[in-house]
Image (cartoon, rainbow, N blue to C red; front, side):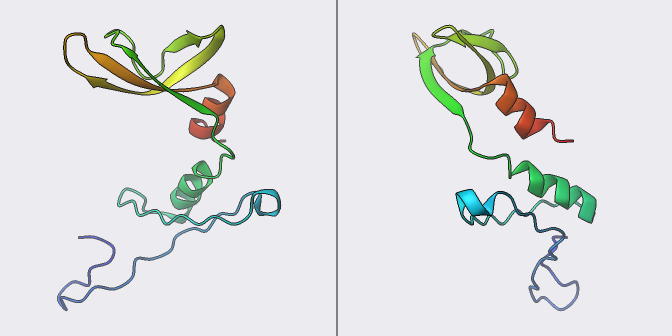
Length: 116
């Protein structure tokens, strides 16, 4: 059952709002994002998820290169002498194959994935 279904009546009802989070609206303006997640059951979990989307300006690099099949998300790589963390990898198979990496600084990864 999803949050927007009413059991027995066959009618859809709006999902419950568990949390609303605000960030640096004075300098960045107001952006809104609606997130539905069936795994979030409490207001505390919803607040943590909402805050994870308020990590500020994302400082990422996206590159496409020849595939190195040992590179995985979480690995550290160097791009022009800058140490970056791989946050996602997608691969296109072929001869030769290619990979697309999303890279971020260690500080950016800490802000985005390790909220406290």
